[in-house]
Structure formats: C-alpha cells, structure tokens
Length: 456
Image (cartoon, rainbow, N blue to C red; front, side, top):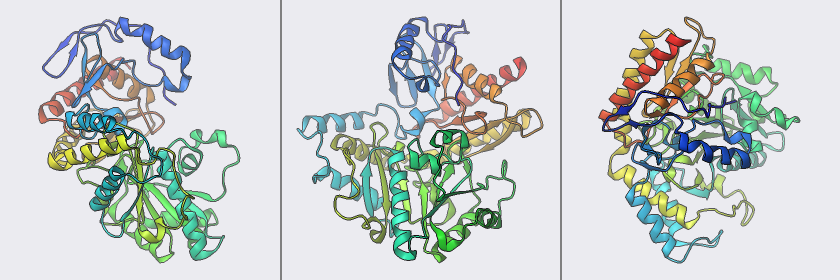
C-alpha cells in the first residue's frame, strides 16, 4: 500500500536548468487547496501519488501552473510512450471528435477496422485477431475467459486452472486480482477461486531458483497437473519490479504449454509498444504466446486496451457473447493510430533500446556505490531499483519513499514506490526522452539517493 505524501509545503533549493524548474516550496502552496478539495470528494485510494498538481505535460516534461517543471519518469504510469501531448495525437483526437462520430458500441466503424488491422500487422502469426477493449484489467479478464473456454473445449471441465505467478500485477478487477500475485490486494475477495494457482516468478533476486523444475514443483505441490491447466498468464516483465524471467525458462514454458494444449498469455499492458527496446516484450524471449493483452502505451493518452490471439481462440465466444460498451471508441482509436505511427516513424522503440542502455548503465554504477540498492532490473526504458537494508535483501520502503520524494523536490517525477514491499523505485520515462534528459535525471536520482541514505 502506498504511504501518503505530506501536503505541508517544504522550502527546497531552487532548480533552474533547461529541463527542470523548481521555483516554489514543494508541494506548491497554491496547489494544496485544490489537492485538499480532491481529498474531500475522492476515496483515500486516490491519495498515493506525489502531490504535484499537473497542469500540462509536453514530451517528457510535466508542468504545474506555478512555474515548476519536472522531467517525467512515470509516463503517467507507462501510458505516454510516444510522449505527452504530442501534436499529432491531439490533432487526431480533435479531427475524430469533429467528425460527428464519438461512440458506436460494437456497431462497425472504419476507424476501429483500421486500428485492429494496424495492431494485427505489428504482431507475428498466428496472432491476427484483435479485440479492442478499454483497460488492461479488462483485457486480462478476457484472457482468463478465453483460456477457460479453450481448456474446457479441448480437455473437458476439469481443464480450467489458470496458473499465474507470485508478485504479479494484472489489474484491479476480481479476475485480474486473483491472477495477480500480491496477497494483500486480494484479501477482500475472501472466497478465492480454487482454479487459480500461483508459481514463483524466476526473477533471480527474490526467487533464486530460476529453473523450470521450480515451476513444475509448484504445480505438483498445488495438486495441479498439466492436463488440468487451461492457461498460464504472466507479465512479460513483472510490473512491480521490472523483472524479466530467463529466456531459457520462457522457452521451456512455451514448450510445456504447447504440449498440454494450454494457452500461454503474455500480459503486455506495461511492456508493449516499444517500452523494452523491442516492440513487444515477449520478443526478448524468442517465443510467440497464444494470447497478448495490451493497454497503457497503445494510445499514449486515452483509455484503450486490446487482446490479440489466433482465430481458433478468439472466435470461441459467439456473436454478442463477449462485448464491451466502449470497445474501440472512435476517439481512442484515433489517438492510438497516431501514437503507433509516431512510435514507428520516429524510431522510438530503438530510442528506448539506446536510451535504456544508457539508463541501466547509470543504475548499475549506482548499485556499486550504494549498498542500499539490492538489485536493478528491467530492459529498455523501464527499470526497477530495489531499496534494501544495507547488505541484505530486506526491503527498505522508507528509503524508496524518501528517494521518490527527494527526486520530486529536485524536478524529477516518479510515481509512488511499488513492489517488493513498496520498496522499488520504478523508472519509466516516455520513449521520446533524450540523452541530455537521461544524463540529467540520473544525476538527480543519485543526489536523491545520497541525501536519503545520509538522513536515514
């Protein structure tokens, strides 16, 4: 659970560079009444992020209305892959809004056809059927449904188990949270579906046994055999830590699922659309899954999600039996088409790879200097920095919180610490970020770490 940031303005040193400006106490005193208004009418669950009153955002920078400017390392929770406020996306949204078509449910539209074709064209065979939805959670729910429908079809009603991984995050809806691997997030469900089984995620840090045998042992201990498993779902990298599984593990998992007629779903909601230096995160593993869920970075702006798979899987639900009220909303489709065009035409996937290598080089060097950094993981422009008690694996959530707070006060913006007991500093800038901004923001992060360690 995120801890709240103080709304008491603190005097902080002024910052004035071409990329960052801090000219007020933080939070800006004038912003506090607005934030307090929000807190009076919104649930406490909305109060976990740094108290920055966003006014506008452009590229990889976020501005308030009081003269402050931050380099953004959040991408608005990994959404703005093409960058904030891109003119091409704005123009596409405006043009579609002015066209006279704002909503059309599942009735056909040309723009929905164009987006589904565009996404299908970016995926390998046989992932050529695309179902447009609204959120990442909704796509995960669809993956669970399709996996169970397929399992029952090929193996009878006993083939219904969904295997997912410890420490995973798949969304906030009931099915997505049962597939998730964070026990505290599903205590509220009480009567958990026994058809969900969890295996350890082989990140190499918290789970040191990264062998495929460990996966098989977990199934055996849960009393689950291959013929019972309808689907295996995992994030291409675990969102809370930015951890990838070993390629050998994933290739063996792909072979195992195929041998048991089990659907393998790669959750690409955080990983897709160039985030990891390849267009799809699963490309790092040299595999093709049966289902791919996606969202966040698909539009760099408006709510949109999608699930893709082969026709024999995607066509299992009959007409009208798997729909969504806002499926393929025309304005969201326009934003997504413009965003994908930017990612492809501007080479932002390659920029993610190159800038990501530079970012990870800085972080690995920091890890050598600070024993309070337990490990660094990620690829491309996503990274997780695990804060620990020195020379241990014990999470240090206070340190992670203080690093994020100190960075915010210096003009570097991240979202609240995630994963690993709230002790992972998550880094995910827009893919349009420049070398100058990477260098400057990494220097800021190092300052924030040094100060936070010193005052701990």
